[in-house]
Length: 271
Image (cartoon, rainbow, N blue to C red; front, side):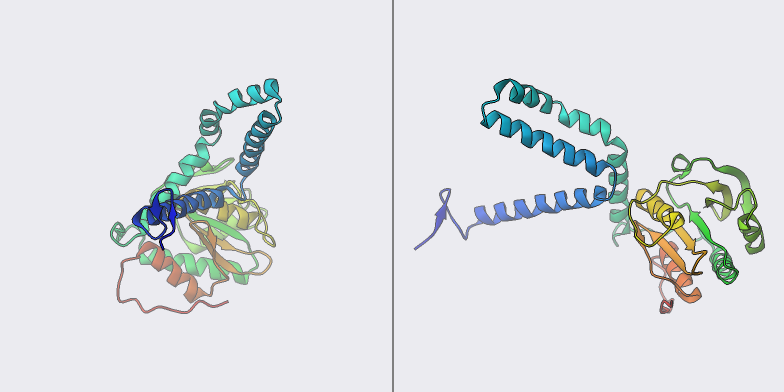
């Protein structure tokens, strides 16, 4: 005895397609909600959902005048949402492009873009800052220009990344020690830059929220040194790493800038 729904057997290609269709739509909705869950934009989504539900309920309760007004207003919601969320949509598409670029068949490393000496200097700088109890947020620009995400920054004329110079800039109460240092092509191009912050992240201060926030919106790598604990962390693609040892930090940086480089012996991350 076959069980039919809508004229097709339950175990048929038609229903298999419908199940896959629902799963595909669920994944898209989950991805969209995950992208804005902790963002201010989520409040707008909730308000719009309440607005639509209210319009349907009032129509069913025969509040014809109010329901009709809400129904007509709902017709312009798609355009209004695009205008409201244009920055979020642009960031979402940018993140999707980065995820696709990380896939093996699209991933094309750029050897020489970041030299080993820069990574070595960066690790030495983080270790020195950690020992001295100095906090830092150093953001390494990759393919995307970070200028539009930075505010109140002081431009610098492409200063070479040298550990002792970086420490001098970050030493308090110097005028440039606060905010983020932005690095482009191995050179320091901004200091005292303020970045968009991640909403949430319990137990961490503004430095870590800013590093995570810029990594959510761009392909930049944020290198963080905690002033309180001395822990070194990386924020990449909206994810904050655990505390890294010098070797762990070096390995993560090499893996980020040289993803296709073979023959490098993996090293364990340390706390």
